[in-house]
Image (cartoon, rainbow, N blue to C red; front, side, top):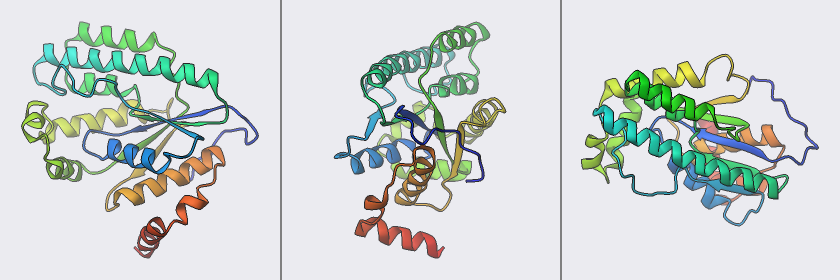
Length: 240
């Protein structure tokens, strides 16, 4: 992948990897597909981005008060998840822990929503007060037009997505710019790996994630990659 990876091959320490990316890039879809493929594999443990399936506040609201509450809600959910990750990390060794979304996204979205300075500082202080368990971040990205098209194709929550500001191109561009600024900063570069999802289907993106995890952990996905359905997708991918 062109980047030096620091690890101890013989280490039994758990490796904690977050999947990151703007809403609509396909991050949660990939997370769920990965979780399904590894359902019978005790080597892997998956943690969702939040535990409340329905948010009490619309994400991405242009209303600054609502936006502030939604980001506090998200941060609270991440803190709860982090405690569960810490407990799991203490109990087990040699596992690969996959997180849906990196906690840093709270700062990225809070910046993108242009919160009042005092509200952003409160969120930032709360974020910095937590000892986040996260070794690496796999950042899925794509062009704004591609991400917006994927959001439209999902369609199931169309009425709510307008309320969440998800269809706004300017909002999407702002979010991507803050991902570049905060996630891809120099002090993060050793632990962040980028996968460009342009022109790739879900299986192909997951194959790239598996390749990265193999480099990070020396875990072999050979049996999974040799399954008939995945093998056919891999052949199509290599022919491109």
